[in-house]
Length: 230
Ligand SMILES: *Cc1c(COP(=O)(O)O)cnc(C)c1O
Image 1 (cartoon, rainbow, N blue to C red):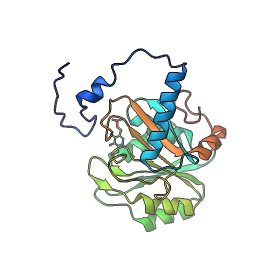
Image 2: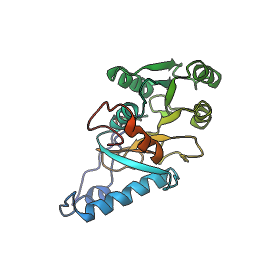
Image 3: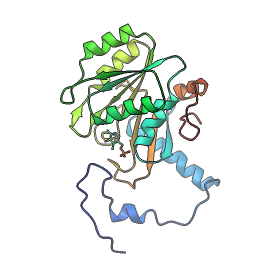
């Protein structure tokens, strides 16, 4: 089969090769059968390995949807009752996270930073110190629109110093920039098949700390289908 190769002048979805397209032409498979389960298991492990995660501590969860679905899932699933989320916001994608908080009526702090600068870490620490009820901190690794690369390791260090959980949108860096989930102080990160993996659009995934996912079973359920623990 000859497939015309288009040049897409957008940051994502990436264009796919003929081999990627053709790899999908397979016999039908039943999602309740062993073959499907073993394929999923392998894929979930491989996704953790890309960010050098220890499979005894980290796991991945797949969702059908574009990258935004995993932002929605992480934010709505990982906030304990009565606690706040801090969004370190220096671009459009972090702004999207703020909007997700608004839609779910979550208590949040929006640390609004200039879009052409990295966030001031002293200010981040000040906010964490003054708001002891912040349980979750969210930021974007690479703000795709501007190319600003945020210092996630340093931010994550502060997040953990104040005993909060760190979520990083790595959708435009996963499999592109080296990431070590543990050394980079990340508890949850996410990505989508359609970006750096150059796979087909429609499958996205969260990679995160297995113990924290289990713990989140007791947190308020704000969505039925888009809940990380479920
Ligand atoms: C592409 C991207 C997303 C997800 O966008 P979708 O349009 O849902 O695929 C989220 N965050 C960043 C940083 C991105 O580059």
